[in-house]
Amino acid sequence: MFKSSYNMFAWHLFVLVVLNFIQSSYQVASTNPLSSIDYGPEIPFRMNMSSYRELTVNVSFNQDLTKASAFDSVRLSFKTSTVSPQFNILSLDTQSTSFLIPKKQLEAQKYIHTFRVKVHANYIGHALLQPSTVEYINLAAKKSNITPIPDDINKLPVTIVQYEGIWGTIFLISVIILMLLSYISLGAQLDQDNLLQVIKKPKTLILGYLIGVLVMPVIAWFVGQWLFQNQPLYRIGSFVFACSPAASGSTLWTVMLNSDEELSVSLQIVSTVGALFTMPLMFYIMDKSQALDRELQHTIKVPYARLIQTLFLLLVALLIGWQFVGKNPRAQKVSRRIFRPLVFFVLIFIIVFSSILYWHIYQMFDWTITLGSFIIGMSTYIVSGMLGHCINCDMDRAIAISISSVYKNSGVAFAVLLVAFDSPDTYIAYVPCLTQIVMISLSFYLAYTILTLYKYLRRCGQPDVIQATDDTTTRAEDSNATAELGRSGRTVKSDSIGEKSTKSDENDELIAMNVTDIDPEAMTSDSRHRPSKGELGEIREEAGGDS
Image 1 (cartoon, rainbow, N blue to C red):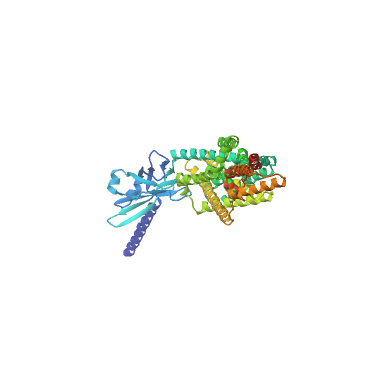
Image 2 (image 1 turned 120 degrees about the horizontal axis):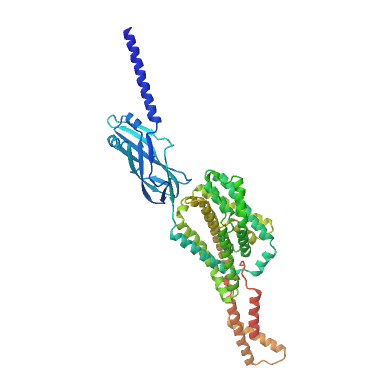
């Protein structure tokens, strides 16, 4: 009986030891091994993209939990997490992922230790730095116990930005100067009769403006709800770009694709003026329909000063080109020759320079944002062109409406985002704007290449023009003069015929000089720039006066 009682007591004692061990193990696993953690005075921690920085982390370990654990040393590990919708924008140095502290050193420091963590900023955006696990290591027993740190531990927010510096200012000034030169040259090429016809019959202008205001914002709203559900900054940036007015590049591309530049200029002016009223209305409607994410707690405002500045520079450049360059025949001739090469250079310059300056934004392009931008751009272009055709527009005007509807002013969109957000959120929201500009520009470059190749092949297929020589022209003039004088019953002297031949040679030279002054590109059958009736009349008067 005594032996049975002893066995029962031993069994109960064993159960208590096991339960105590399980309870202590559960307590170690469920209790936070850290009492507190401080990241230094700079919160949030700001970094420049592609830079390394070292920060100080003061960690206070849980004394009760640490003393209760049988260990020789402690290993503390850190981790990073990305808040922005991009890649792993923040990474730890290989020597900063974990730190090993001996137990004696930790006891001497009263369980408070200072760590120096080195991090690298990969891309712009927002990230978090936090400790991940505490590992208690028993070297004698060759055992370890890993305790995860709860997610509610103090985390360090890290903000990564990219400063443009002086190159951003140089790029902005260069684009403004090149755009002003292009619009001065464009003002000299505008046809006054066509422009007055657009103003006197504003049906096409008004309907084209309404197409540009409604089509792209509606498509951007649906695509944003479909592809950017978890990325509110992308959704806002895409919608803001769609609500912006037509850009100056829309008119330049209209000219490059041989469409109606007078209608394109009118659409750009009207859309810029109308944006003062339509942009706040569209933002209000989308805000009430909860299309914009309310968690961001930002207010979308319209940059009225930027719109007025754009409109003022546009009108001044067009008036200078129209009144001063267009009224001077020699200046107009030079402007006509350099216009297309200048426009082509401006469009190439904007794409190349912006890709270098905003390379940190280009690095954020992924298949989602690229697909969304392509769908928005192509759908807007096709739908706008079809609606333009439905309002009885010819092909040139339908193309002008489509280009004005899809090629929006990214500068105005960036100004809106700059007022609404702080860096780097401004650039993150600007990603869909830049993506759409790139996709649309590449599509237009492809269309321009195909059109140029088609014109070249068509020109090569035409027969060569046989020009008459001076001797042939002289003999023909002499024969005509002899026949005419013979019919009148008068005799013809050789001197009079020679004088007539000399006058004929002078007339031919004058005609040749006037013909060579005309741009050869304007003489093609598919070009819109042909010699006016006034120019042909002057040529005939000069030839007739000399004869």
